[in-house]
Image 1 (spheres, rainbow, N blue to C red):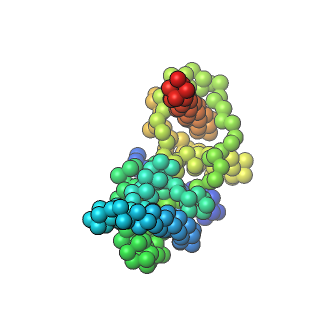
Image 2 (image 1 turned 30 degrees about the horizontal axis):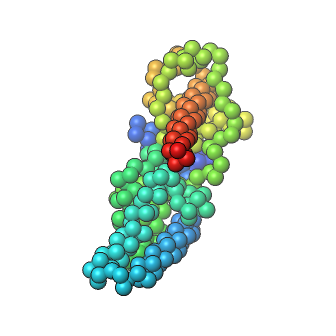
Image 3 (image 1 turned 90 degrees about the vertical axis):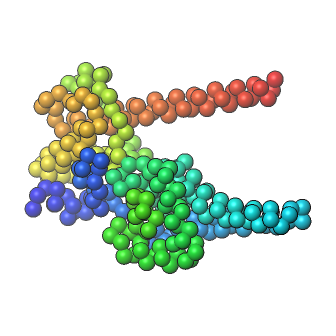
Length: 278
């Protein structure tokens, strides 16, 4: 049995996914029970909000024509069973209230962030399998599919996975001195979520791994991460140092991007506040 097989049999990794570079990774999928609990929370929330919206429309029906009232009812249904769930998933990068409570998230089949078109397709199919059939079709498909996917996931190319409530890692990643020059010129792009989770989990558990398994898994993850950096690290760079450097670089890039976003929001807020005060 290979070191990778031993890691998998030990329960350190979950369901297999394939990255855009055709590299096999592991990411745990959400269980059927978890998906049911998540869906129930979301359905109850949207039903309550939809009922409230319909109540408001009905309370003002006397001031509306019959055709307009019917149009508003149809738009309300479309809003709460299709548009809002899709938009929420886009804004939260694959999450919702139910998924936040159950610690799950929607990702692409390759582990990356779900795209807007995928979210709308997934939500549109959900009208049939979740709302029209009262969840019977969704429950049957989720229970029978290998990754607990419903029809919407299959058609949209998405996948619900277990997701840590906290940040992927709070450990400070360091760039080894021999990689300092390379780190100053390298360009990186966003890693698939599955790859990032695996790299972080590996670095946190390396002291518990058998040396042979540790070396094999480090090489495997390094080969998976290398297509996301340019130029490649210097020849002979230890795989573990490369992995830690990549995570440190991505952390710095994302932190800087978040700070710039926050600065822009604060600038807009100050501009609006000054206009209102003025």
